[in-house]
Length: 342
Image (cartoon, rainbow, N blue to C red; front, side, top):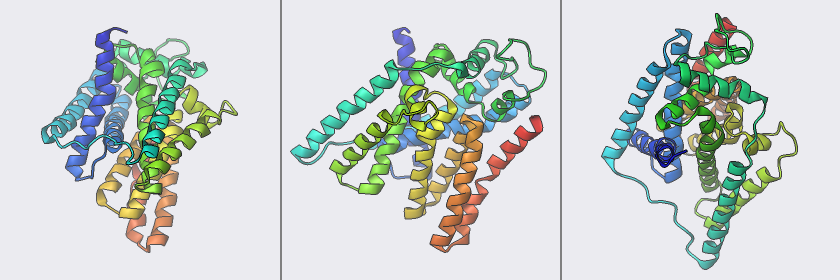
């Protein structure tokens, strides 16, 4: 990787989502924090990618169409976000020596956590499908029309390959590779996990704020406990902690490590504040889960269905239940498309 590639990667995977999140928050009149801008920026990009990519894949359109449309959407959000120029202050330290010591200790552990994932990456048989698909898309500008097992052209989608049509996560790898000049393999195994981990820590920090409010010390403790749970949670190759620590680039690992906590966070916001823009953000997050994996279609629907039912009871509002259940419609459409294709 050259300096130019690294600079472009930082721009595409960190700065651009932050600016896009600022644009989204300005448009929806959402109170801003640095972690919230980054998370919502990624979610806005992923949701739009899902919306445009699935029909384009079904119609067997060129990957370049996705690149143009997604880039236009990102430029629109970033342009508006930069035009507004109202950015939140970065996270400050504590107000006492003890809190500052805890902040430094937490920061050191966070850096160690990043290095653990960066230097301890894991590859397995899943690379032969997901990464190969992304590389083929970037090389040929054709989306999911090559069998990753044989290299032959696909006449129709079948079996496991059908899932990629409605959950085209590999397209996002290819898109990032196209913009940065890096191979989708490097994006998947080296660069993207660092960006996803940044978003995960942002979600953990926001969750700690909902649990402990302005208690800075206990918010740091919450982050430390979460890191320890993941570091010592690799008791099985199939556990969510193992997936996040060893192969965060995979769609199902992103759902487990980022998607589910973010869904819980947004549902907490809706329960506590019941703002209309939180429903919009939840819908964008649900579409993002659909992009990552076929599992996301099911998990998103289950979350929305269960939370909507319970919130309707606790809030004594049938409208709340209808709002949640209405957001399941995209999941139903994607599942129907998958069933028809398969």
